[in-house]
Length: 250
Ligand code: PXP
Image 1 (cartoon, protein in one colour):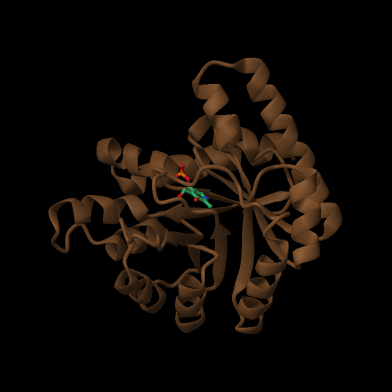
Image 2 (cartoon, rainbow, N blue to C red; image 1 turned 90 degrees about the horizontal axis):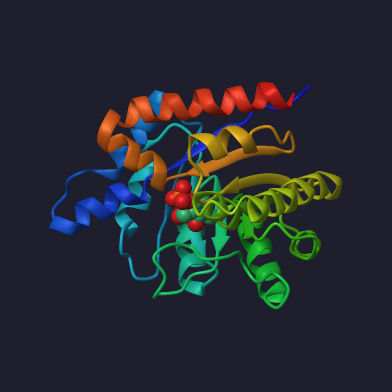
């Protein structure tokens, strides 16, 4: 039987808008509660080193106030590991982070970062936090993730989504092929497979057809749609697209 596909909603952009004015509104925790009421299975928030959107107190409140799993996206730094150990979210998704980037560009370098990522994974796992590594959809990255001992990987879908939005259909097919092969390999290795970055209704519908992927994490597109139709409607339409794609692939 095909496994259900979970929707994790990334609420970072609500904090970006709040910080633009420097006050308390709009409140990212309110957005998280609304997202859950609309059908999100979990909430993702990225505490960046420069605190450009989510702040420490947002993470603490999310942990206290939401009823669904919190996915704490973070760089693999001592500071962030310390905050995660204190916050004890359901999951920590380790991502590469560059100060100059607008969003997370590319997956973690799990090959050269192997030993350090292994220590961090063990530390977080011992504290009851489920570790996910945000990686490129490559076999090399999957083998390294297995060796690191990560129970979960999140495949970076950015190159695929970019190729589609630039009308590069051959490249898009190639990138989707990489995601398909990586998802199948993750299952063989016994690693839970998630995916995210740049997804919209159409790409979420398509990737939902891959049965090994059991969670999508989506932020930017949903928050953009929310401006026009409201967050509840945006999430409901996304949920429907994912369910349609899952049914087609089953
Ligand atoms: N997954 C990870 C690990 C991310 O870094 C991001 C971007 O913050 C997302 C998913 C969501 O990407 P988007 O905002 O493009 O939907």
